[in-house]
Amino acid sequence: MIEKTQLEKIETKLDSVEKSTDGTIKLIFNTGFHCVLIPGKNNTSSNSDFKNKYTLCVSSQVGCAMGCTFCLTAKMGFMRNLSADEIVLQFDCALEHLCSLYNIDMSKLSNGKNSKGVCYASELITSIVYMGMGEPFNNYDNVVSSISSIHETYCYSFSKITVSTSGVIPSMKKFIDLDWKVHLAISFHSGFQEVRDRLMPFLSRWKIDELVEICNLYSEKFRDKIMVEYIMIKGITDSKKNLEKLLSLGFSKMTNFNLIPLNGTMELEGKTYYCSDNETLDNFHSTLRDAGFKCFTRKNMGEDIEAACGMLNQND
Ligand code: SF4
Image (cartoon, rainbow, N blue to C red; front, side, top):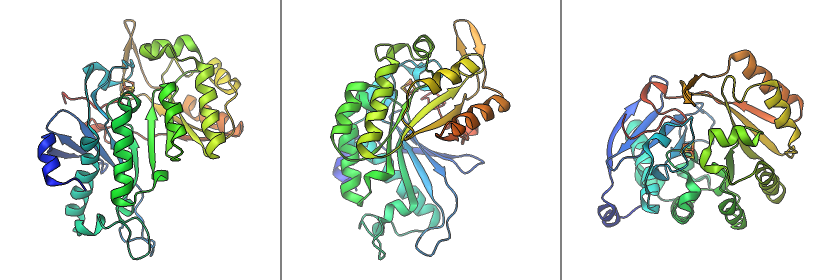
């Protein structure tokens, strides 16, 4: 846990908390960033000390420089990197909030493992995803240091942490070389270079072939599945041609696909775009499954408090 003196130094503290009707909780910090607790399925297993489980989505920057056209954070522009302490603070505050919500003795959590040898904190926050505001690999050192700190302080397993990147290839390579077996997710969004470049204009230097190559390298090295995130936008990413292209790129069968319905609308080149319809989403999902890939469709949570994917913005 962060020492009180360190907290005072960074001058960042929890400002307010918002709760969605679907149970999603947004923690808002006084220096312009948020983290989000997403409720999972309740667990009544006898091995578990807690019934309520959450995934924590943490921010790594205030704003973001990547300018992805479908993302609200991009509209803020880049403001600053979060320090490692500020990233860990999100985890500490999330735990503290849940402990007060469910009447749990917080001091037990920082003692590492429970009587059954299970990481106590991960009984409550079952996974941490670096998927909030910012591109984590544009703040590489602080992200790595925050992961190391959470791992050491809480005995929190690397395998319960996921870093989601828009595809900063040199940092992905460095991260894989750490041999930590932290999960990786990559915002891929189109198999066509020109479509990806329109959606993610500041990432055009990274080519599709190189992205597929590094995804396969990760899967091969760790015998683990990388998560390929794919946004579903009607008329841009969801045509039959897009699906065929995606299947032709040579992704290893160790790849998981996560289809993300566009949140709200998106403006691009003077036109308004919407989420794909359910039939198209189902077709993408079943075709990828039939081709031998594991495929998920993300359910957007916390839309009423603007905590859903791509909705984190300072000015809400
Ligand atoms: S999607 Fe991620 S990388 Fe792209 S602008 Fe938003 S926060 Fe940045």
